[in-house]
Image 1 (cartoon, rainbow over the protein chains, first blue to last red):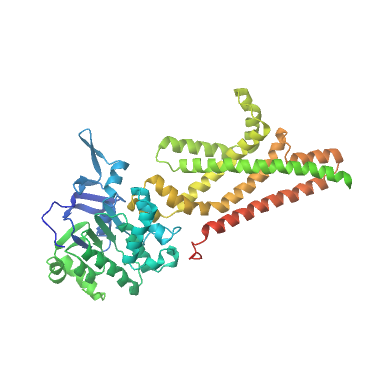
Image 2 (image 1 turned 135 degrees about the vertical axis):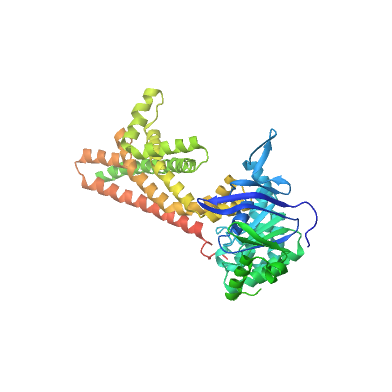
Length: 265
Length: 219
């Protein structure tokens, strides 16, 4: 789905973030249109994962503002004044956002089905029967309907990650964040997860942000690619522009290294 | 030999009191362990202070002194307790302070990624704690809780000092009446060991029950 001229669903304006003396994000700004599929690439430590974590409210920001669907993520208005967001505000904002982690983060003491139904039942008050029905549809979509009663420890990495995707989708977020979701997988398991992402990409109008080292997939998946280095966006463009005709030297050097390491683009 | 039957009955009566103390003391200890253990992890500073004060006080003073306070000093402030109530109170509060550190340690040992999954799924802090963190942490607490319960069982002998007729108190009575030390104290040695073994077995069984599936047994 091509990005429309509609108001952006994510507006990031001048955010900075440091871990101790290390400045991960440095006065960063960009926005994302509703339905846009965005790939974030760049060397380790360039800040791309931190952006996802900040959007999921797992990390705060030091300065700048973020708006999600028009609302300020980390601040709220009270008595006409801007105040730091409280728990209620963050809960309201998180309803719009889902995240899939590099290491799956499934709940090991709950079976696959319960992993998927837990959050809708707790956070949206969905009835158990309805939650299970929806969960089975999602598990079917990721090809794991037959594993509904399995425990996470019985699954392969690729299966775990597909459950994690179903679990995040169960809350029906407008925005999905994928943080290096294939990096922890054995090479032969990467494809089954990418296939699920590919389906989501083509069949839903969710806004998707994907941090990845799979350049070939990023090229096919994304409407737009952001190349990060040292907490800044070095290059921002269509996949063909970034991957085939990178303008910036740093982008060229990064892609050259990736190709030298044997990755397909 | 006939006289011993009556004395054995005395000791068994005492065993009932010891078991009562152990059970009720353990329940109070468990409640206190969770209250204070989670209290120490609270975001509200006064709650943390209160929990820390409780833990440090009851770990840092002798159970013997605590029991005497509960039984002899509290009445001076208008709280009169029966010996059993005083025993349960002192044992529960004392062991609960140790248990609180177990709760805190187990909760903190659950990986950051589980908390992050809770946030990403928009659970409240309480929902995440109750549904995700505590069920996993509880399994880790169990072995140490078992130790604590056995410690509590053995510490319960101090109640004989406030004239509560527990097993140790009754053994003293038999010893005084018969002049024989070996028989009554061998009897209670065996009985303490039996009760402790039952606690051990029960905890191990519970642990096995709660971890089923985690290692892939449940299908």
